Image 1 (tube, helix red, strand yellow):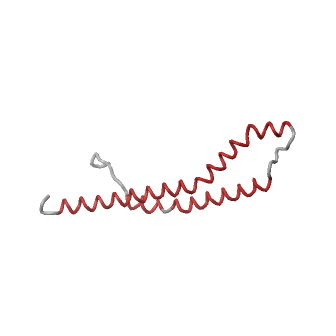
Image 2 (spheres, helix red, strand yellow):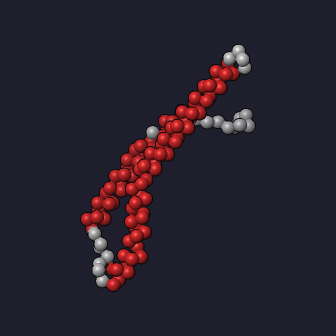
Length: 106
């Protein structure tokens, strides 16, 4: 902060926003692979009283975690969009301000 203000690297933000696409795709693959394996295994804790007790305590939280992992690609896509939108808005404002400063009315 050489002038006591702040700096924004909007071009870098816009460029790096695109990296979220690959990360979101990878998270989606991880979710699909995990869901496939867990689906193939089925209720692996058994049907005896201990297995039923385990399922009662842990199955719902595990399903919640798997659902959250499934939502992650969309959430990462949303972050990417917000980063890209913010970068575009900053650049547009910066260009508009530069035109205003350079105009005869300034």
